[in-house]
Amino acid sequence: MVLNVIPIFMLVMYLSLKSLSKELLLDMYYKMVLLRRFEERVVELYRAGEIPGIAHGYVGQEGVAVGVCSALRKDDYILSTHRGHGHSLAKGIDPRHLMAELYGKKSGVCKGIGGSMHSTEPEVGVIFSSAIVGGNIPIAVGVALAFKMRGEDRVAVSFFGDGATNTGAFHEALNLASVWKLPIVFVCENNFYAISMHISKSVSAKEIVDRAVSYNMPGIVVDGNDVVAVYEATLKSVERARRGEGPTLIEARTYRWLDHGMYYLGKYRSDEEFMMWKQRCPIKVLKERLIGEGISTESELSRLESKAVHDVDEAVRFARESEEPDLEFVKHFVYVR
Image (cartoon, rainbow, N blue to C red):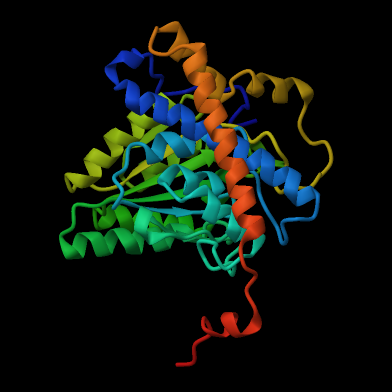
């Protein structure tokens, strides 16, 4: 059985948090709480029938999105997946406009036409999200190629799950990115399940990160529930990309607390496994370190938690009160060539 669910990490970060600014650390904490509260509210609204279509929750994986995006500049681009709310919020999309998009409203980031799986806002660096498993990976390579051809000091990041590493798009993209030494970081959010199939039943390699060797690029395994470790690994990979040294594959091992989508698939994970990962909650891990190392206090973090709740409440209010698109509005986005 390959890739045991017990987390064993090649890259373990025990750096003191004091090597980073308090402002950065508190921003990461706030963003993780915002992602968590946003997704919890989306589950509630989806099950109440307020949010149409299909939605996929990001609860439990907040350390990856926030750690990666905190290491990027605003003009760097990320390309996301069907489970993309967390990536979008971490990169800077306004939660009000993201919630409005989920509601299908005109004030949404894609005018209510994209829905949950297609949030995009180039102004903050969210250039594309794809509902197709592995679909964003070769497009991210194209974005990185454009950066290189223009001589721009920018980096592309492609997020994808463990299931996407079995697609042809993944292998073609990594190969081409390496051949052309493109400024891109591939981030595999390995949550160990492709829908309900455990990775041991679908991946022949001993570790996903081993596939980096095939394409002559560095591979890093990192604790995806340690936002600081993810940040440090991403920062090194981004700096390498900016120097023109090519791509890196990061395998961030994490765990989604919800089912594949916001519906029940039946029991396919043991209680022991689930509770083990809940004890490694990325928000809990950072909170304990912030207090333990004397960087912040319980009351200061509570204020950030309250702000996150307020911001999500405001996002829901904004979405509910926003205008519904009509047929004439939708026609503006249909083109004939």
